[in-house]
Amino acid sequence: MTKHRIYTTSFASIYLLYLAKAEKKGRTKSEVDEIIRWLTGYNPQQLASALSDGTDFETFFADAPQMNPARRLIKGVICGIRVEDIKEPTMQEIRYLDKLVDELARGKAMAKILRAA
Image (cartoon, rainbow, N blue to C red; front, side, top):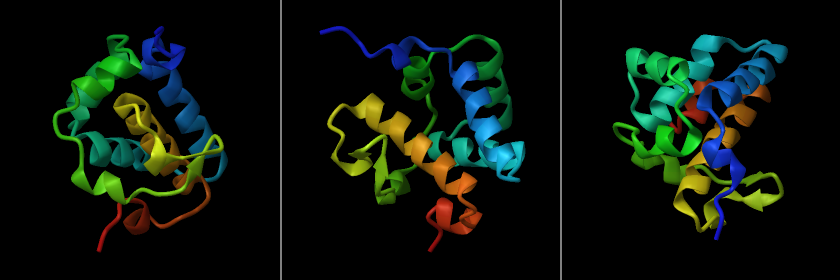
């Protein structure tokens, strides 16, 4: 079975789309970065390195220092599919990030996006 092409897409190219989506709705780069770091455990230097060295999406998630266990609290529909029902682990991680950026762009408070108690 062939991999979905998103796996081989550079994380940096998708990151720019995340930024554009968030900034168009008045949100900031630092908020996008905070979401990514919360989800993956990357520190600012590791994130900057992944963006500059052409890391693909699959490697970005495979090399994540510590995926946040609270990501399992992310529920809802993205691209017509419930994120909690996605079976392929890497695709589910990608869709979790998509969902978080969508919530940011819709104006949701950061505490709620980051599933703070």
